[in-house]
Length: 390
Ligand SMILES: *Cc1c(COP(=O)(O)O)cnc(C)c1O
Image (cartoon, rainbow, N blue to C red):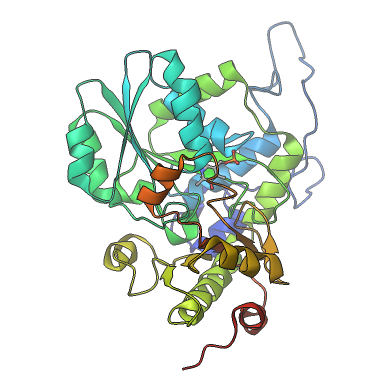
């Protein structure tokens, strides 16, 4: 269905139908995988519509993009070969001499790309704790063109105020880009809150089945989309048609999956909180989260991402190596539950003092709570951590 017909419909209806039309030749209800690199042209210099070459245009990819635009309340979306490729495209809107203010607790790969790759090209970065808008304001300079944040962050679940940061960025003529990977548009839609770009590692909740590496971004502004399209066409980080098909298929159940992730995440966080072998639970959906009120004002659910500190590295290892349903692995957002020790896994490349400063202690365990049955997940945790006595 076309976007205009869909605006008044619910999120789940849009997840299934937005941007999706039956294939015109056969009426196939599922978008075909257009596994082709090029298109035959009827005459010299006269391609079939805009279909001239696969890096520039692919119908499977375009269907995915139309769907994502509707889910993020944007006008346009764009798919990439990975989440990092999507974020890289955003920063490449800038030129040498421009400045970026970035949240300091972003995904480790994002920090690595900023500090070790893009900073070599003459783009400057400042890293701040974006929970406090004043800190962001203080870091903005005349050359600042982009404010890049993540909310909630990984693995500390810091939350930043998207509305306040959008006002700040716009006051400085800069763009606000929000990495919405942890929340998914089911729970949080940054563009509705004033952000200019919502970016995703679709590897996580968007695809949701741990079988694709991909990136997505959504925008409201057509001119910004044109610039990003030019960048993607010119730098080449497009996803393959099969990956687009799989992600589109994943999105058809985003609302159903997220509902269950939200429910299971909250149940696991509540069970872990107050457990005698757990020192601290970090989950924006718990009242004990220092930014619970802010989180509740911009999110409608709190996902399946839960962090818990069990005190020491030995206990974190014993915990994560002995669960049965929670598999020890990096990544997140799939239907199956995963568990990891950030200090030794996802955040191993972050210097120890910086890790400590951010609260990524050796005893911190990160759970990506899947959509299995709640009682089985709790039973699995209970086998390893022992019963919760109250
Ligand atoms: C995984 C992740 C990324 C990077 O995405 P890839 O698809 O692995 O390139 C970026 N941001 C966040 C928050 C992530 O979790």
